[in-house]
Length: 145
Ligand code: DQA
View 1: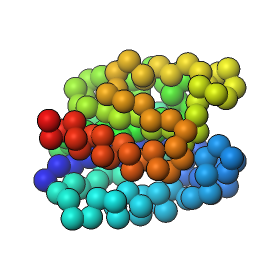
View 2: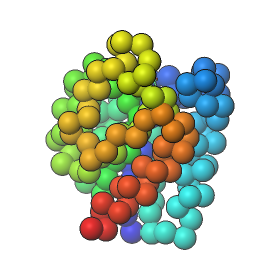
View 3: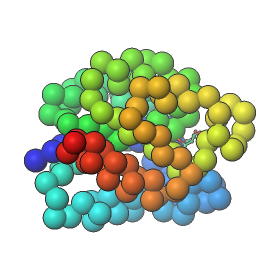
View 4: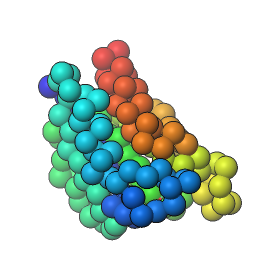
């Protein structure tokens, strides 16, 4: 059994109300449902966590790291400046896949800087909710290598 931590950062609890053009129409609960469904009949177990607070996300990672085989994370706007979260992720030594619903490189200037891209095995950006499903496949094939 492989346990994968799935973290969603600030404002991702508000999916469904945010710009559908950038983020799609689904709520976070619906995305979680799709991720579980995508992984039915596998030996994956998910630990889902969302917070609007960087420190709480770090507390969660530190608490759960020992149980986990890998991490899928959408850091929200922390993508562009969250260096404490970056340190916490580095300290896990786990393989990490980064997901963005929108295409961050084709939006406002402040979103172009991705401080996590050099510590993750892959960045999936612009595929809306499908990005989370692709992240599962990527992480699993990496772990099975
Ligand atoms: C996001 C992109 C970020 O720039 C933004 O702050 C978010 C969501 C995405 O999923 O496209 O909250 O990470």
